Length: 128
Image (cartoon, rainbow, N blue to C red; front, side, top):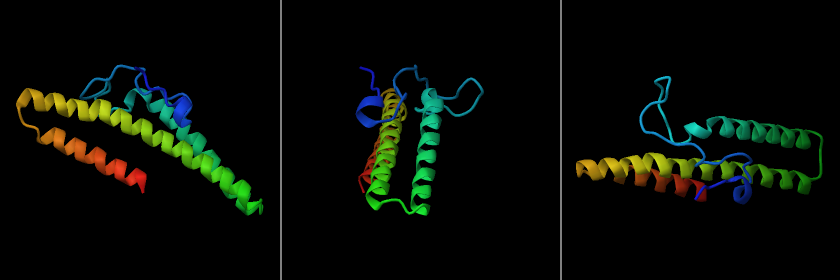
């Protein structure tokens, strides 16, 4: 099942499972992360959020009504959460899955335990 975070999480255009993911390095020899196939969509969304935050700053500078500012802050926060959830899903589907395969192949589960601990810590930070 494809996870399109456009609808439930508000991040337009990020289908984290739309492209195949391979471990290791990309075509240019750079590191290949779980989010790599959707990197351009993530960057586009982050630029949109950046513009939204600049707009909030302008609202404060222009002495706009506090509830209107809070509404925009909530929208920006929701957009950042959507990006975070997409990145977390990509991490689980790529990095943690790769560590699980490595663990299966080598019989050493340290790598998968480390990746799960990383993901758990990231989730804890997102929940604060």
